[in-house]
Image (cartoon, rainbow, N blue to C red; front, side):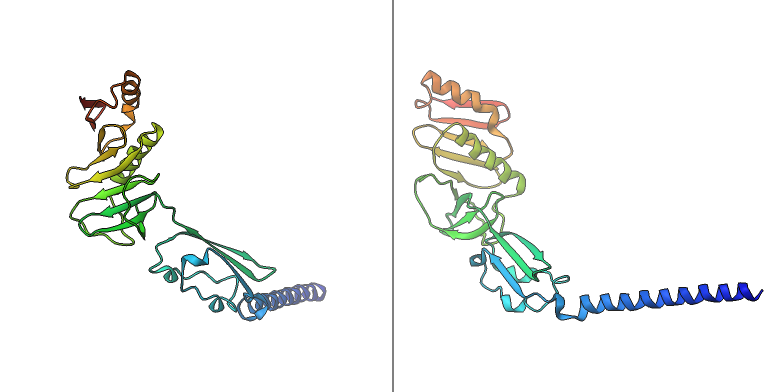
Amino acid sequence: MSVRRRSRGGNRLRRILLLFTTLILLVGVIYLIWFSPIFEIKEVEISGEDLIANLDVETIKGQNIFFWKIDPNIFDGSHRVAEVTVDKEFLKRKVIITLLARQKYTIWCFNKEDVCYWVDEKGFIFSEAPNLEGSLNLRIIKDSSERKLSLGDQVLEDELFKNLVLAITFMEDLNIEQEEIVIGDLKFKEAVARVKSGPDIYFSLMLDPSFAQNVVKSLRQSGEWNAINYLDLRVPNRAYYNN
């Protein structure tokens, strides 16, 4: 009986010592991660910092590298930033912040307000732009609707802008050089491309115009392309033109 009691007592003591050791280690790890300066950020590297004016590097240094996250509020008013990536090098206690700029897809001019903006490939207004005439290898949209938009707005609903992009792609794939694309009253959901050395092209912002590629190729091959006044692609799978 006495031997068994000592054995049980020894097992209990070992369990207590193991639990105590585990607790000490856990407290030590918590102290190192939460309170020790060993994980404080010492270096910050920023790529694309010209896209934003109010990013203070000194406020980042000294923070815990495990728990620090970039504050999204610092991008308020900076519409040129499309994406932010953050990489952490824990051994060097270094944070690398990469800011990616929005890409200029088209110049969008509001005739009523006499103002133009750069718009990205998703239809997001992110910067003021010059009011240019002619293509100059740029995509220029002239919007005569009654809307008043500004930085941070979407120029069109997603589906309408998607089809506008398809219309632009349609012309670029066929090497049709347009001077500008005109959008009027949005209740009609239409756009007109003013083409250099060719007819005006009427698009529906509700349709993918790719069905008419062979029509354009045929008109060019027959020599009729420069003789017609307009090409109307506003009806699904139908192309109308007028001589």
